[in-house]
Amino acid sequence: MHVDDFIQRKRSSWERLGTLLDRAGASLAALSAEEIQELGRLYRQASSDLALARRDFPRHQVSRYLNGLVARGYGAIYRDNDGHGGKLGAFFLLNLPRTFRATWAFTLAAFLMFLLPAIAAFALTYRDPTLASALVPGAEQVIADVRSGTEWWQRINADGRSLSSAEIMTNNIGVAVRAFAGGITFGVYTLIVLANNGLLLGVVAGAAQRFGFAANLWGFMAAHSVVELSVIFIAGGAGLQLGWALLHPGLLARRAALVLAARRAVLLLLGCVPLLVIAGVIEAFISPSALPLAVKLLVALGSGLALYTYLLGAGRI
Image (cartoon, rainbow, N blue to C red; front, side, top):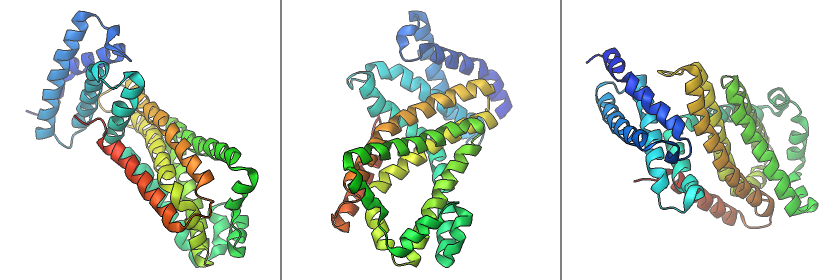
């Protein structure tokens, strides 16, 4: 069977399933008994179509479309009977990790858009620190602090850790929200936010390596960076989903594709907020402390293992 024939034959049932899922919203209670039965039938049919598409058209966009449609159907059918203590439990134990796994490619793209500029900035700054201001405007003061051995993060202690923790959380949440909201610009602003943050880290790390300050820098950053950067990548990936839906809606109308992507993206962003709170607490109370580097590395390892065990393992059948 040719892929166009397959799409033509099945498209109406897929669109009907999508319409029912849109109407169901947060609960199947929004549907009539007949519609719930129809939803179940269309979901099983779409699951069968997905298996066929994966076998015969694995590289075609119809496979990605059906994968997202079936994932939505599964979530709608099983979330009301998940036995995990209500909507909040279902959100964290099922919906958030499943959505992360379903959209991991966007998170990976965000990670690369941060990492590659960071590597380039590190190399250039290490070779010639005077280039830092060309990469990051206003970097001269940071370079001067690094050159003089000033541990500016100790100001967190001077300001009072509880206050600083709140400020750090607010700043980190702001970065995540900007990375997410940038998706509406077809993803361009999201890429700018990710690249700028990567450049900044690369400049600071390159200067620290050049002036023998690396141990001090990583001693501060190690404990909180795994959770903090992971959340920025997730939020950036959520923004890229919006941009991709606008640029490449696939079989859906552009508006419908954007609505579907926005639902996934908002879910990811909401899941990022408590994680950024955790990162902010670590950054305010553990990162600037006099604890040995080994302890901070253990915090980083433990928090990273806990986060990715949760994201990759929770909500599996």
